[in-house]
Amino acid sequence: MGEQIFKIAVIPGDGIGKEVIKEGLRVLDHLAEESNGKFAFEYDHFPWGCEYYLEHGKMMDEDGVEKMRDYDAIYFGAVGFPGVPDHVSLWGLRLAICQGLDQWANIRPVEFLPGVPHRINHPDPESLNWILVRENSEGEYSGIGGRNFQGRGPGGEVAVQSALFTEKGTERIIRYAFDLARTRKRKKVTSVTKSNAQQYGMVLWDEVFARVAKDYPDVETDQWLVDAMAAHFVLHPEDLEVVVASNLFADILSDLGSALAGSLGIAASANLSPDHSAPSMFESVHGSAPDIAGKGIANPIGTIGSAALMLDHLGLKEEADRVNQAIADTTGQGVLTRDIGGTADTVEITDAIIKNLSKVNVEA
Image 1 (cartoon, rainbow, N blue to C red):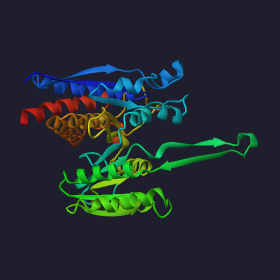
Image 2 (cartoon, rainbow, N blue to C red):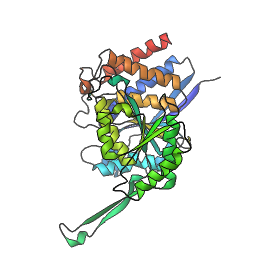
Image 3 (cartoon, one colour):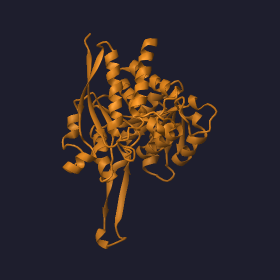
């Protein structure tokens, strides 16, 4: 059997996105070199982002989404930089790709790495491990609404922003969460809504969740309102396994989970087309962090962890497991960036991860 070649579209984006993507590619190349011809990666780099917008008046090429379709995966850095409004940069690039390719499932693991100072009072934080499943195509990020009545003068404008919940979109993300729960040691799904206040869209979500749950009698379930769940993340994280929520709620809760685990810099994520009908996109949860861009101190763990999610999605599960183990070994050895209490810079922590990758390979 010949070498398997994976075509990866690389979009470094803005700020520290460029720095951490470079380190993630180093890890991928190291894995390819150690595979003895089993697989290789071919990269095409796209210069899209805020600098591109300031020069061209758009965040990416007009046919950018179509250009992505022929790739096996998309590796994304971060988007956003001073001078370009955040809603322009987000809708013009990341959301345009997610919605254009119908990457409807966003997964964000919450992991408590050894050696990383945790922001949670728990007797055994390293035993905690849960995953957020985020509806990634509709909900509060549907972009439906508008602004009007500017002619009324100062203070007279009206803005309407609507959240869209479809039965199809709701059911497919809930089923994905249940299927994911079946692959884990503890089979449990927690649904998060605000159906007492959002009496249409989120009541639909609740009804679909109850119906789908009947098809998974082997999976434990519970349901929470989002405000109570925010408290539950802090007070009883041991109850969590797979948490499924709308686009906005899962976005917020994933940041809370990452902060509890120590830093947004260690949080990985994947925007998935689960049936592989389009390429999936892999990115860290953190933003472009313009305040530290160019200083070489950004934490690459979230981006390298996102590469592990990409490897798993491409069928390279063993390599994905090795990357995750190398990250844990590195933090456990006390090699930490500044955001998690250490002194290592971006390159140094990646060097340590690559060194541990080789060790994991030898031991395997």
